[in-house]
Length: 311
Image (cartoon, rainbow, N blue to C red; front, side, top):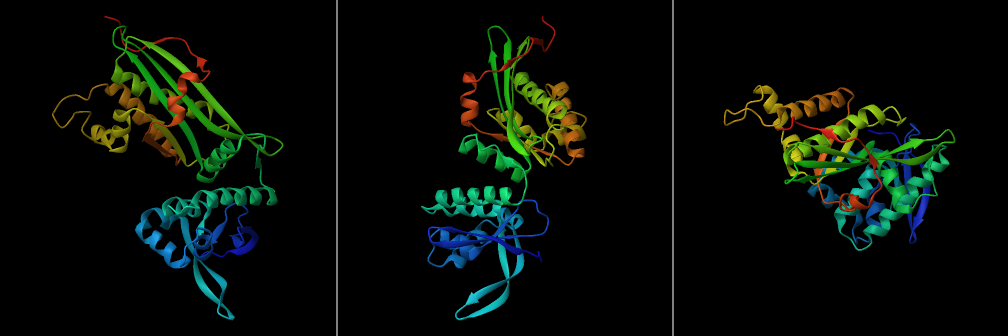
């Protein structure tokens, strides 16, 4: 059972929201089912949140804990074991609820998180940044993540390709202000193929994070989240094909040599490197706005590289 204490109370549309924290002073806070349910305007708050949890137990179990709290029942105060949710859990409940007020409650929770960070003496996010960017940074910090968006291009006629990627992370200044950092690179290739240029994109961005980002972020990183339009790269990594190929000496189920195995071996080595640092690399197939708008970004132009010997 987690030992928590009430550290802050704020009001949302006339409803009191109590923030509970432990003694780690890490900026994390917890809230009860009753209060998050009331803010979402459920007629039976505890029952409604309990049903959401039951339907999404795999997702919400890791964001909840039990603590001993004093609650009011009728005209008396009683002490009971109470299920509470972390900041991430509260946001997930809002998202899963589909209630009309969910967005407003999430905005309020972000304000609570920012208020707690300021009052606890922790580093605060640069307030000159836009609200959406501040939320991105806070989400990355809360989830201990780095975000990367990658896109690749290929010309069949010229056999040339181009890699573009955007790495988003944060850095804490000596004035304890957290600022957004971005790496945007464009890398042209000649003598390549469509399938290879996608894999090369993943290799470059992982190498860039390993060499140029991890030592800069002076906080724990648990996950590198890569967003991409490349279904083959996403499927190979997420469906465990790299491990199967390694175990079969890079021979497919059809008893053929794995294509582009020179590149897949580099991916496998990089993922192993991150795993040894207790960092998970997740690949998500998406058409996120950052990917769609990459043509409008100003990228650092790198020299043209040759993938394969010209024939």
